[in-house]
Length: 253
DNA sequence: TAACGAATAT
DNA sequence: AATATTCGTT
Image (cartoon, rainbow, N blue to C red; front, side):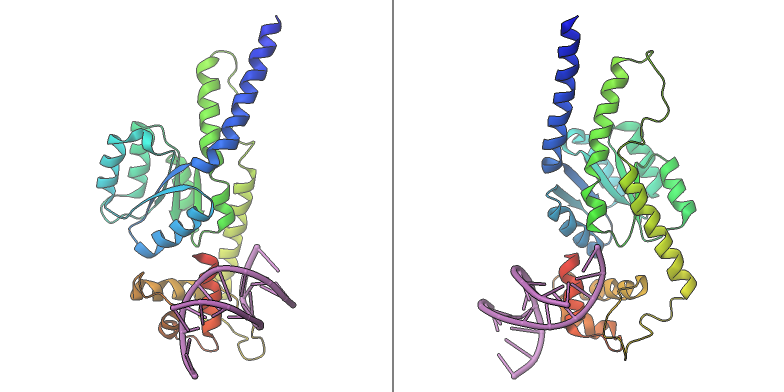
């Protein structure tokens, strides 16, 4: 049965090809009602060389749009909070009506919320602020899903393994775990102090709290006038220099 | 001159 | 990896 061997080799080869090509042309629908978050996310996605489609319309609109062009996107990133629809409901409907991986996004790292997201069918859960490295890995979800559905349709009765989703997700899980810990530390320390050692240490630590002020400032300014000087003025943090904001901005945008 | 932002340094 | 500093441009 030499041809079986050939088949297997062919299959492996195809999947490798898929793996190589797909991260370049991954089409991502990013979805957030907050224009600033969307802009941040868009910048990061662009850096990862994803094709991005960014939508800040209402959830219902997006859902209809998705139904019409189901095959346009490979992956959806959506904030859990939507003004007109529960993010989890969106998640359920997407999972039910179309076969697309959904990544949930929120500013809250609460374990219960994360669990809820996962149990409602999210394939990953990111906590803001999203880091570049986390986005670099998300394309794997798409590949894994494709590979899974292939092997499922091929051999339904062959084997029913339960540990099929663990191989490639280790990196993301570790990242998420790390983020949760950071958040807990931040909460323990209390959030009224953003930079306790301003005078002796010029080193700025962009704590969650400080970053929130940063985002709030950009929100207030609007995405056109978000230059370091204005952001700095709005943040009104002692000891913070324009250069600090500029540096932070450069990394995120 | 002041601020920007990309590049580069720590 | 995160933040600071430098430097050419606006």
